[in-house]
Length: 235
Image (cartoon, rainbow, N blue to C red; front, side):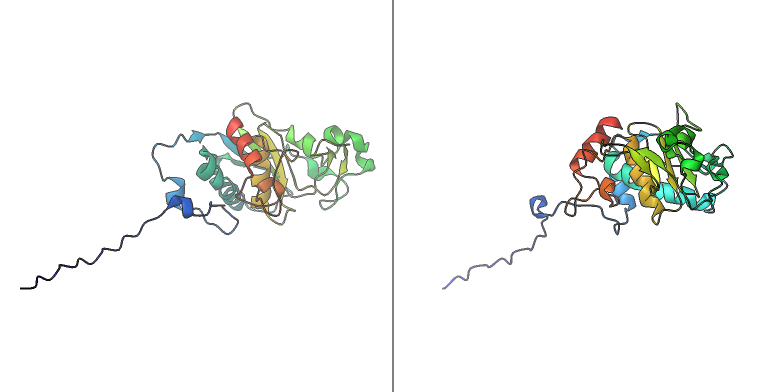
């Protein structure tokens, strides 16, 4: 009698090999999910006090400004375990931000009629550094939003300073202060860019390129290794 062998049909197993997966780069098109944000209860989330002031030249509503800020900082929680959530109570209209008093109009940066160009950071109406020195706090990270042009005397790469009249934001490197203008075509990206400066990301050390994505090099929701390391070191 011939005994037939029992043939067992193999069960197909779906296996995910991490080594075969491409490294994830969060791009502008990537919407961060709740699972990505709160995937692990063991994460060491660091919470920050944050505030946003806007001036009378800003025509964007307080609700939209808060939404843009919180969308800009979502990636900080997902990638760096930093909670920078802005509450509605901390979005305030301020008369202290007085760059709109410039006689040149909201769309024009300051020139020599506002003072010597080299004194932009201390005397120009729309000088981003001067405005960043207003409404400071030792306990809060402060974002200022204005509806006019900005100017700055300096060079982000450490070169010879010049009078810059096309900037749309300025963030204090390793500090609590930043300012953005709604003249930007992408307010969320500019907010994320300047906040990154607050936590140590620098143009001079950024490795961002057409291949390596980084917010400091003009992308969004992405950081090169150099900027990422700086943020981890200063968070």
